[in-house]
Length: 66
Image 1 (cartoon, helix red, strand yellow):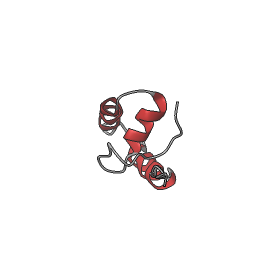
Image 2 (cartoon, rainbow, N blue to C red):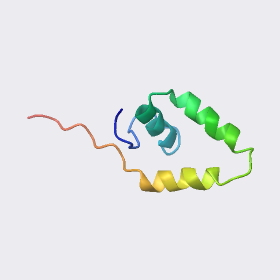
Image 3 (tube, rainbow, N blue to C red):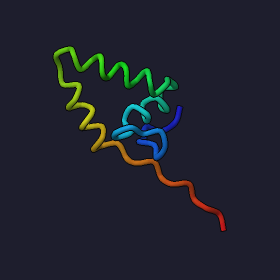
């Protein structure tokens, strides 16, 4: 498992689902589907997504060796 960060590639909106998919070894499409389906249920899903978007750091760019 890798660190929980928002990756620079594979993002759609904020990169939260892509980051969760990398961390837990699931596909990003599965996380996106879970999020969209959960939005029809009552609860703070959208607020949790926004909080993760603000709190998760961006993935650091790969350093180039000179």
